[in-house]
Image: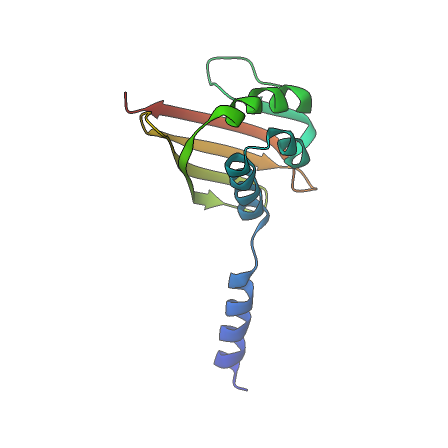
Length: 131
């Protein structure tokens, strides 16, 4: 096998593996779509700084984060889309779109920092709706 073939094979193998940031956003989306908000605790650090709203103080416990996620139980979800715009090993930025049946489209962005265990230690979101 020549050097180019080896590099290409390695690149294809690496392409199949998700980064920590990709895994985190993918898991968050799965939790959202499954409407099982208690699972969010599994991907949040023990001492998060979680900004649900940029104009309010952060949530600082897993219990508080799980509490705000309870709203997803009543959502009639048409779709959730998350596109990662930037990532390093521990930092991610993404654009998202969310649509509920008979409600306006929501579009926003996320900023995420992960701890050494791949759990969210800092989360910020900004969003707006089309109404």
